[in-house]
Image 1 (cartoon, rainbow, N blue to C red):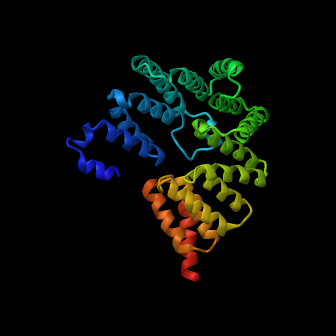
Image 2 (cartoon, one colour; image 1 turned 90 degrees about the horizontal axis):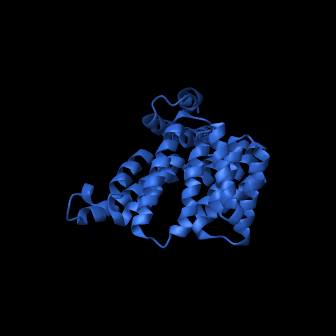
Image 3 (cartoon, rainbow, N blue to C red; image 1 turned 135 degrees about the horizontal axis):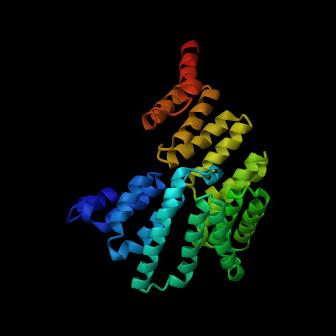
Length: 310
């Protein structure tokens, strides 16, 4: 559809904000975050796309990698830079709402506060994390079922190393989904299920984790992270053929662009004695990241050696 739209453009593709917006959204879900930001930055110059483009940009800075799990809440230098970008974009988004007089403002004013709180939490600096959680608690007082705030609070608790509280908060979100699933919070429910699944996998509660992953992919069949976690569960149970099947889905849904997923897929191909497939995926990963650690020693060389002797 995008290719057809490009051919139908009466002016240069680079100047067509609607097309740039569509390209940006597509690249965001293909895990091509930097390219998505370029297109969305161009799209937000048009008032028709400004609010949605800015919102997507904020979400990219908050979660640059769609396939990242609980490990994304560990301290890193990129998060500090991204937090500053989020603060700036939230100010721009607030101005855009004021200019548009959108009837979505009442609902989205809470969302903006959540964005600001998450920006503070993602710095992983104690004082700012505490400020972010305080902001979220203020939202919670009058909006106990506002899922984005509950999810952000659980993230803050994980950053504070308070896993038990975070797990209980995520369970509360899962219960809200059972009582009445709100499509407006689809992404937040999905992230909550997958974060909770991460915790269950870490404590070897594979049945509980598996049910949450199935819940996520049943609501969103293209949820690569859910397929990846199911692959990990099968891998830990040494069911390598089943693991490979699920990693294949994850690999395809991330547009074969996430080296860590490719590594796991190649590893399970090796264990399942699918040596040619393992070699092919290794080569693809090395095209993406020539210096990707251990994949040559752990998988590629072993697959080649096994192929020669089989």
